[in-house]
Image 1: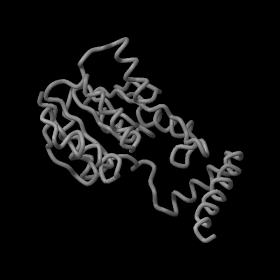
Image 2: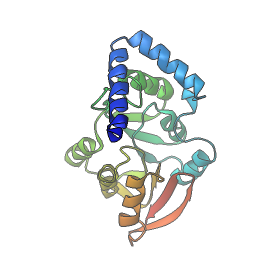
Image 3: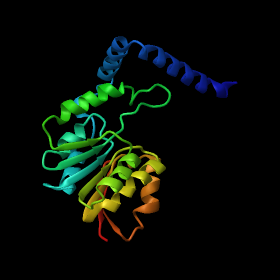
Length: 214
């Protein structure tokens, strides 16, 4: 019986969340309070500090960056300061509560618009696979200088994102975020570190960078 307690507790939390989500004003107010209590600054989400400086150094300037998983656009804003950014994010909530990391998808999307207003950005509101198929059919050009992968942090999710390297120029950069997570790390171990087509350039915190050499 004890083994069922965590599942019961989890179901109760999910049901409570679903109930609160029916009252947007109340849910947003509670979510904001919790963010403040945890000292989470929405303006500092995404890659920041030393990790950001490390990433920007390799992303270069005056190029085309593909960013997979843009969320609220904080990292997108920083990447687009000296580059044109193609962003991919479907803004679809999870299957249980319909939220994105605890927020309404429309709230996250509006924050993206606010953060990237006036910047050189093109958004594909699609999954990585959907956007790749669209690119294959309608653009089919190898014009991408750098790729930043921060989408689904599962093995299969990263594998799907990696197919974009088909359109990464020779000498281009692909960087992965949250490499401390098992799905991301396992993929890198299986497909990148021993891949003769890519050179490992280094890492900072949870970001690892590779160069396409063939």
